[in-house]
Length: 476
Image 1 (cartoon, helix red, strand yellow):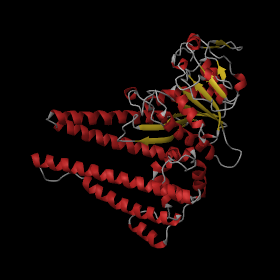
Image 2 (image 1 turned 90 degrees about the vertical axis):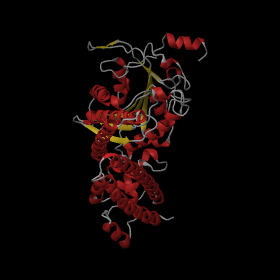
Image 3 (image 1 turned 180 degrees about the vertical axis):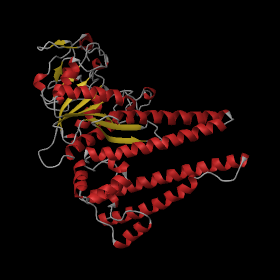
Image 4 (image 1 turned 90 degrees about the horizontal axis):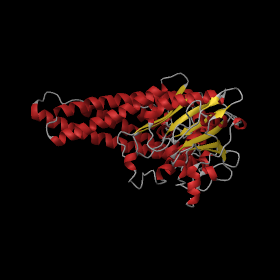
């Protein structure tokens, strides 16, 4: 199929989707005039039919996304062809925007689509006229907010709209679930309604944490994905920036590990604010919670366990596209930021997987914090790979996923011990597996020095302790 054929097919499906969505509005209306058991049965049937209808819309969206990717691929990253006049008239009759390029509007986030390079997305966006860009932001905010390669300011505006809509939807679901629980009489119905209410309230809490994280000056919501039917992870992924990543000379991207989720974002952004201050002017940082981190209740699942590599490899593909997008979104040549990827615990595995991907070639430095191993190579050449291991960090002593970065050639050790500085300040020691980015600690100051492009100011120390020595004795 040619790029024009894909464009036409996608446009016709857009028309079909709009008509189907209008039918859903009828289904969503309450059943009028009925009371008693008949009303209850009718309501149950309506809810089941509406659920099936939403599933059909989701499937149609998946087809549209696939067609969008195909059009971009066939166009070699150039803007897809404009629809013909007859099709434009059909789109106008359906209430669509005939001036908007359909395949581009239906392409999914680059992080989840092989071959949709952030550089191609950036070229496509720069070639769109302002009216088309505005229409896409207005009509397809989830698409715009999820495309790696677009400017941070654009993604932020779109994702804030997605966040507001997701919160409104979740509140409506909470009300409906609470009403079902109040009407339930049978134990099975009570259990089902109670479970639904618990799930939607958990999603509301996570969305609230994202909203709290971005409700501060200088912060941007660079990515947001909400999966109402998530079977893995926590169903909400996000990336929040502190500082202007579109103009900063230095950008650090921090990836968390086991059991983490977006509920941590407000506290993590406070840490990153302190890290930026320590790094110096012209620095921005991103808290990247853009993958499904393994959770405690998934340890026994071979496909999701923290003991396996699968979540890290999937997360690495997403992170690679995100890192590549930060570079691609910069206008002109020679404007790429000095980009540092920072991974903590299992997040160090995700970071290493991303750096093995060609899409993350723009990452200049990598810092591993409390790493249980990153594989056979440190991910960056000597002088650009760093590791911090705190005293008493048992996780960092396991070497579960390969050689401990703390003992790998070409990786420079950064201190986590207490340090007295020449200016009289005393940096605190980090102990155990957490606290590597605690403001005022030696570890956080060292990470800031690397992120801020001042590695010569870092305090070096391999951090060899009893755990390392014990591992040597048992041959690990």
